[in-house]
Length: 334
Image 1 (cartoon, one colour):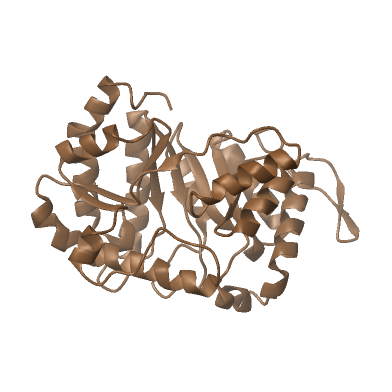
Image 2 (tube, helix red, strand yellow):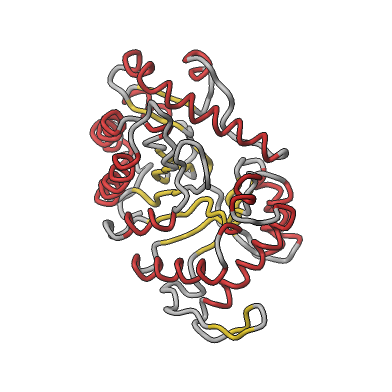
């Protein structure tokens, strides 16, 4: 069973201020790193969002990687189309050196129209833009000169990881699954059902089997010694986040998301992927999940107060994690 953290830094007016959120994300990543059983920190990216969604996940990754020793920073998704291909290759190569090979990315081509307008890009050409950027990175990370848009260039330093950081293709549509399969990339779907399409297409294209797709646990898991007390405290933040993601999904036009609109605590409680539970309930829930499950704590979702966030994580460490370690569901040195 894999343990992860995730941050998007989106915070409404009633949420925590961004300086506190960014500092807390670093501190919580250090906490997870020292525990020795967390695999990765997912860092998301969007541009021009009303409530400060992180637009610079590579900068945030640098802050976390510089403070940790083992945990991986997974840029998921990195909106590749919003970055100049050569600067993208350089920035990722430097991150890979800073971290000694602890950076991965899920390449997304973007779907929000205003982001393309913001950067003067044609959204209809987003697939070609992304493919050009990824092809550039592949050539750049050899450290050798190569031709780029009619001129010879060179990107240094070379990444630590052979061939550069591990790249997953992200997406929430059938087309994204097919595209990742035919390109031989690993795949990180926005919805788990897409992985079956991906596996079939990858086999048909002649590539070896992909990495095991970790099954997702709850997208928001909060451990509390008194859920009745804490539900009203966390619900506004969770509702803001789930409503925001559900609204943004309509801009995509196709695909699916695990986040659905909700206006009340009762609606949130009815969602199978939103859980505010006691330590015993948390352990029971996780014990019923397959061993190839990724448990990702979206610890500051919706601008959640860092103090509330820490209470959940520390209670998980004290009252749930030892039991998961004892029964072998979680291992040290991940």
